[in-house]
Length: 81
Image (cartoon, rainbow, N blue to C red):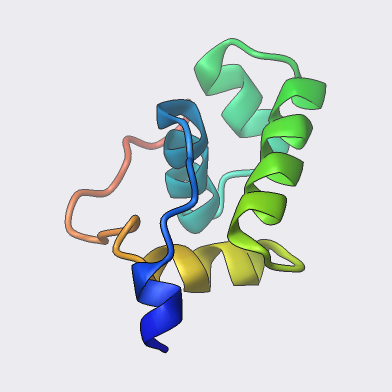
């Protein structure tokens, strides 16, 4: 468990932002719309996040991000319109 907490993948600020949207159950299309990016760009970010965190799926992204204290559920993101 300590190895997971002490590992420090080089996530970009944009990747961290996308992790937060993923954790709050936003779809790829919703994230793309909010960030004014294409869905393909969001998919690429998601693949990079999966690789950097060494996880297999979105559940793994949320779990590991929470364990690494990247995610904090105190300040919810504004709802998408």
